Every structure is written in structure tokens, then in C-alpha cells.
Image 1 (tube, one colour):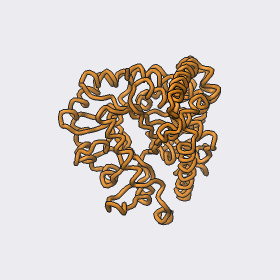
Image 2 (tube, one colour):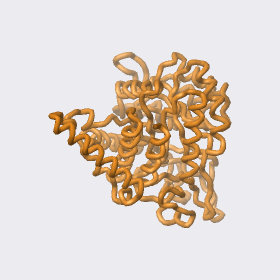
Image 3 (cartoon, one colour):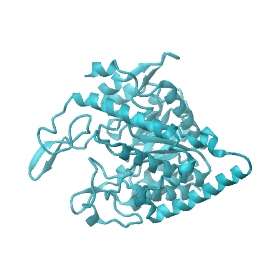
Image 4 (tube, helix red, strand yellow):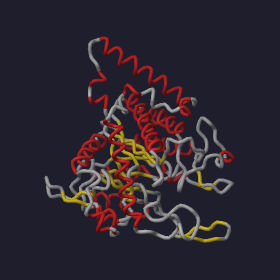
Amino acid sequence: MIKRISAMPPLVFAGEADQLRERLADVCEGRAFLLQAGDCAESFDSTTDSIRDRLKVILQMAVVLTYSSGVPTVKVGRIAGQFAKPRSSSTETVDDVELPSFRGHIVNAAGFTEAERIPDPARLLDAYNQSASTLNLLRAFTTGGYASLGNVHAWNQQFVADSPAGQRYEQLANELDRALRFMEACGLDALESPDLRTVDFYTSHEALLLGYEEALTRQDSRTDDWYDCSAHMLWIGERTRELDGAHVEFLRGVKNPLGCKIGPTATSADVIALCEVLNPEQIPGRLTLITRMGADNVSELLPPILQGVHDTGHPVVWACDPMHGNTYAAANGHKTRHFEDVLREITGFFEAHRSVGTWPGGVHVELTGDDVTECLGGADELTDTDLVQRYETMCDPRLNGRQSVELAFRVAELLT
């Protein structure tokens, strides 16, 4: 199966990855902000509507962040390849039945039967085909007029529009409309500008299955450099960031922009060593450090790491993953996260950067465009009893559309 994939066309191109690195260099210098967002674990069953709605929420969030902060928002999706999931346990137990853990659709199925949990190599090819289809759809949406600022009202889904955050978004959209009409009255048709009719949208996923990633690694005809053409950006997880581990060794050899998750056990020395291995040439935009400390730890643990990396002169993009350090089991057994804990970690992230004098470059969140009830709190004040209504994730709990737009406004307030 790996041999078949290695003979297939690349999913993305080296020039696109280089373009993202240039955009991330702007983030590195404090001239832009990174929004990296998407599903926890993508499904092979994703429909056109679900992919569109995920993109729609990301576009809404980006408009809020750009309009409020005055700096461009670099949009990177956890999409078109986020099919593999690391698990803390190799098995899971339900009603005294123990089976291998679900490790993402690229490995096995989510259903809780012995047959569904058997790893199937044919799923590697399914992942390639699903990624190609999703990318084709994303390119159509982002370059075919759907992402035009003229559609800023159309992005407000009904269940989002009915929320306080959705209503606040409508007010912002009205202000944008007035600005566009003013420019048109002055003789400038802003919506004819390609910059306002299309958006640059990039893909990313955790590079967990190295056989699959290696099969999609190609040598660039322009430079003879190697690129992992499964996505524009790849990241290394908290569980696989060992300096002498296979994931660090593989990804240091490709020229894509890279991310690395940094959890509460990391020290300043650990992170500096990762910078030296993954970006020895100190290229701005090459390396994004995605911190996931937990709301209760970020204020204490993050500043020394920020200071240590800053003192070395390594140019990195700092992004906050406020999701993974704040997961817990609700009383009914569902994994969940509380919206206020997510906000507390982001607030602590911003405060830590201000104390050191570095740029809080972005956020990395798990979300969906669907009207799910997986994370508690938010303007709807979801509680434990609401989780059973629409708990649809295959792995970790995601913010729904209302919570995502609300989060964008709260982050925008911190930026301004």
C-alpha cells in the first residue's frame, strides 16, 4: 500500500509550503496572527456540507481576528489529512469489554467491535483519496468566490447567528459592508481585488504515521530539497517529540513549515534543543511551537521557556493549544473541556508573552461547524447534562460554531 501511495501525485506542492513559511515569518515578526483550527480527528465520512461548514467557521473567526487586530490572519486548517490520533492507552474498555483503541480512520474504525478495531493497511489509500477530495473542495471554495468578503453575511450559519457571538458577528459584517460600499462610492470596486475575493488557506496535520508521510515525500525540482507533500505544514505531537526519536529525525529532513507541541513536562533546555534540531539555520517561519500547558499551569511554566528561547535568538512562531491540557471526564463519562478553561489558558498565554516581551503569535483549536454539544460553557452555558444531546466526536471534544466565533472575539480583545 505504501508503494502505491509513493507512486501517486503529491497532495500539495513545495511552492505552496514555501508560501506558508513566508506567511509564518510575518507571524514570527509580529506582523500577522496564526489561526490553526479544525477537527480533532477527521472522518472518511465527511460530507461536502461538513467540510464547507468547518471552513465557514474558520473564515468567520479570521474576519473577527483581522478586523479587530489590524494584522492579517494566516489560516491553517487541521484538515485534509488529520486522520491519525495518538492515544494515551493502547486499549479501551466498555462494559467490561476491552478492545484496541481507536487510532483514527487511517488505522481502524471507531465502532466498538473487535472487527472494526483491527488495523487495515487499505485505509492508508482511503486517507490519501479522502485528503485529495477534501483539498479539491477547499481550493474550489477559497478561490471560486465563496471566500469573498462579499459573502461575509452568508458565512453566519443559522445556529451561530442565533447566538450572542453570532449577533456580534453580524454587526461586524454590517460594518464591513458599509466600508465596502464607501469604497465603491469612491470609485473603487474592492470586491474585484483578488485579495478580497479569494483567501490563502493551508492544510496541516500531525505527522504520526511515518510510513505514510515518507510515501508522500517528494524532491522539489526547483531546489532538490525534500518536502512532505501530504500537507503544507506538519506537526510533531507532545508524545513523539523525543530528540532522538523517529518523528523528529524524519521531519528535520523536510523543508515544510513544522510545528511541535510543547506540554507541561517540557523544560527550557528541551525546547531550545528542539529548535536547534528542527531549525538549525534559524529560518523565520520554519518552526511553530504550540504550547499546551493547561489553564492552571501556563502562567508558571510558560514564561521561563519563552525567555530561554528568546535569549537564544531562535525565530519561532508561538501558538497556544488551549484544548489538550484542559480535557477531563464529566460525571457521565464523556470527555469534555470547559470553555472558560480554554479562555483561561489563552489569557495566560498572552500574559506570559507580555511579561517576556514576545509576540503571542496564534491559537490552535479543535472545532467543528456542526451544532455539537461536546465542550461545556460558552454563551449557551452548556452543562454536563447537555453532552448527551449531540456528542458526535470520534475522539476529543470540539468547540461548536457558536463557541468558536465567541472564542475569536475573546482572542481579538486580547490582541487589541
